[in-house]
Image (cartoon, chains in turn yellow, purple):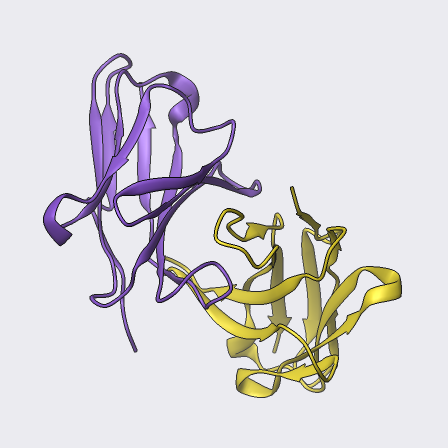
Length: 114
Length: 114
């Protein structure tokens, strides 16, 4: 089955700085890739998703991610973070058929310093 | 936007007892999921449910686990009997049409088995 590795458990950046959260997936076929964000005491919310086409996908709140097949990566980026971006970010991969639900990474906790 | 509700938010139970976790999915969604997250660790896939049937389950979905959604009511996860290692936060999710679509997550039920 497919799997995801998020190598950074915690990331701290200053407000206004740029951000990259790393995600590497394992799946032999064409993946469906997602980034979700989780705020305290809430469920996960979708930031963006990639199915096909342009490997750079835009999401909500200025987030984007780039699918690099040769590297099996789907890193999340933001040009300038805000303190309200502090949350836990999850990367997920699906095989795209209904017998293989999305699998999630361990998450990266982002702290933005004012 | 659409919301998934989970009841209760926190459940404390003695080992060996039965527990039922309830999920009220988005009203027109057809696919339902349970995930398990032990504090600070990976969010692990448990089960994917559609049209009254389990589509996929992981090795974490032990024989003591069962899911159902009788007559379009709550989507439930039942654990009978519970074990200490079942202590975790359980997240319910739903999607409109299959695993390639955005999942909507509930805020989770924290289960503590004593």
